[in-house]
Image 1 (cartoon, one colour):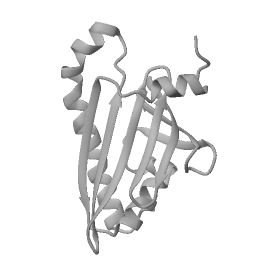
Image 2 (tube, rainbow, N blue to C red):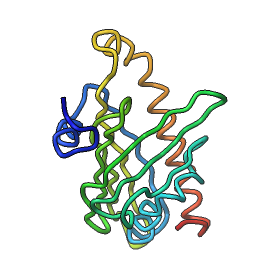
Image 3 (cartoon, rainbow, N blue to C red):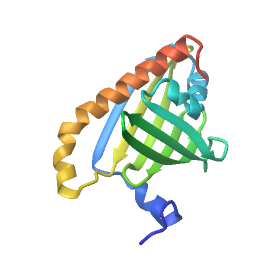
Length: 165
């Protein structure tokens, strides 16, 4: 057994899982501004519905621990992450290492012009529940994709309106 949140556990969680989802948005803002908005972890609560995000340890950059709690009614999902890479203004890499959500994720910014940036949000989750989880994933994937896409659209609007970071 590995120590939850320890080096072995983080290494295992960093392996890509079978549940993969990607969302993309174009933001009418320079990459530096978009990247700063992505690094404003606690402001994710403004654009990810039903979710409160906080930096648990560190400054939000490499090595930091982040916690996102999503609550809908009485159902609560706690997402624990470690920031494993910050390559400003291009990429933020995280590893989800909680009990339910596990796997690597990345947020990438690509400057398309002086004031246009493409953001790609990509996650590779380990699917819980063994074979049942793998069978359920095709049913869950569209909702995951829609949720990420809608969140990124909200993010883009807030950046373009100057409300983020």
